[in-house]
Image (cartoon, rainbow, N blue to C red):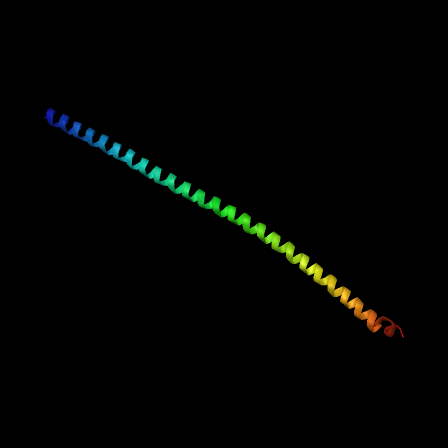
Amino acid sequence: MADLVATVSIISSVSSIILAIFAIWFSRKVEERLKKNFLRLKEVMDNNHDRTKMVLNNIDQEADAIKMTVYNSQAELRQTLEEIIEECDISRNKKE
């Protein structure tokens, strides 16, 4: 009977060791996979961050170009209106 208890104890100990080794091996595989996924995600986020910075820079340049175009158009329009006022003598007609 004592031999049976010792045998069962040894078998359960060996089984526990095998399960512990399997659990450690499995957790390492999961950790490696998570690390790989994290590094991929970090790379994607870095690329997106760089692209976003480029897009914002382009938007700033476009906005500056639009501002200059609007400013130049307003200046031309104002000059044209002043020329029309001078040619038609509109300001004197209103005073009379």
